[in-house]
Image 1 (cartoon, rainbow, N blue to C red):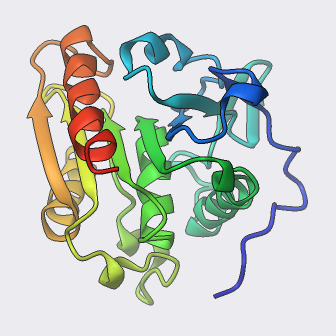
Image 2 (spheres, one colour; image 1 turned 180 degrees about the vertical axis):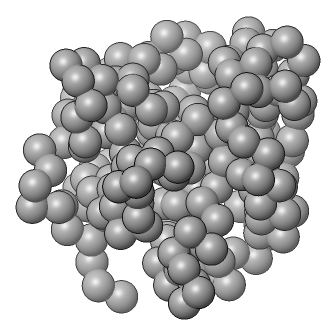
Length: 226
């Protein structure tokens, strides 16, 4: 398999960490992947709600929309969307992760909205690399977006249903369309060890009770397993 490299037009990765560099070695890592139009600071408010054993790092998406606003790839309904940009973003994150993962006992992904699409893409590309995945109010990319030839980037056949996966959402989410939900539901049922919880009234957001469940999930599926 070809090793990922950063896209030539993308900036150097920029991330925020929850711990100083000297305190990270030997800790489990959780990588925070923000949503469309946000930035690396957006999810850092979740860090106090995660188990204290984890080091958290939040990475900025590589495509600039406006000052302080970024995207991993164009919206799927946009004229300039194509899966090549999803792949480029995936390679961008994996190349960065490959440089830091050795100092951590495990790597878990936590993505919100488009960040969940990014997290699932990373898992699908590297099915053995991640201890767990948390997806909040998001979706997985439907391979039909790549056209009739399918999506070779996603190695779904190597996902055997053992990777712990938490999916939290509101059925009334006004942002993630039903076709994306339908595809994602089928995908998670076939490919991962799923914990799925619906939260009424959160719409397209993250709630305190949801984060309490995420903390429990990480404690029992990642920390206890280690």
